[in-house]
Image 1 (cartoon, rainbow, N blue to C red):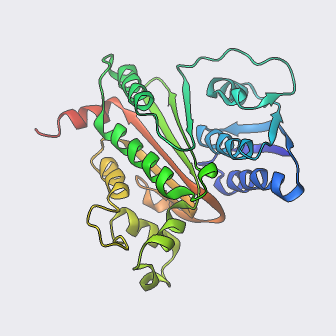
Image 2: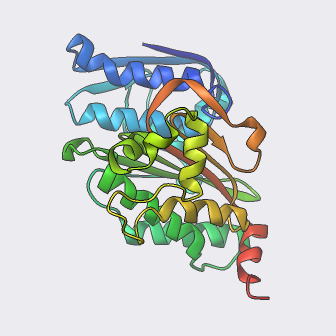
Length: 291
């Protein structure tokens, strides 16, 4: 299977999702237990696409399907593959696996439980990278815990298919966090769990998803403590404790900082992808919240 051209999830969303779906379907459709990915002609790449690709490989690994591949010819894309740890999960078919700088991108994957200590340490590392002080940061730690808990509880009812993946990418003035959650997706879960969705049967998917983050839909059990996690994630972005929050789930791409760029997708993501950034400005905003 070939991946080529613009393989950036945030810029060429439909193509990346369609490619990921084809990869995860390949083993089941053709009864294959070995896949070779040709990625030599990828010209543009982002952290989100790597996260989705690794999640697909995790899913295949649970079906005993081996994944082999090469790396992009373009130096910038090749380096991102090296630093991401992607080659720790794929058998390379050309050359040797190079050593990678683990400070640049950390990958944490899971099927049944979260790793609180590992996540907490990574959040402190991110704060230290930006401020020079290794401190905890409750807004990011809290939303990661909510995303992980939501993934484990709701993403996929089949135990062996539960699959979340968190990554952090370090640049000079920010740390990029992504969370990939393979499963039913937010809208898919909503249809199963909540009562009010029939009232919005004529609303488009984007309006429904926006309603979820605004806590428009109540739990089917009417438990006041349920369905608070996603609104809290939006609140952290609204209060500028995190920045540039983006969510892709099912057939919707929501951009919370630039709503005009949100859109309904032609291709459905089987799960949920979160993207946000942590900056020194956001940390300062949190510290000064009581002033």
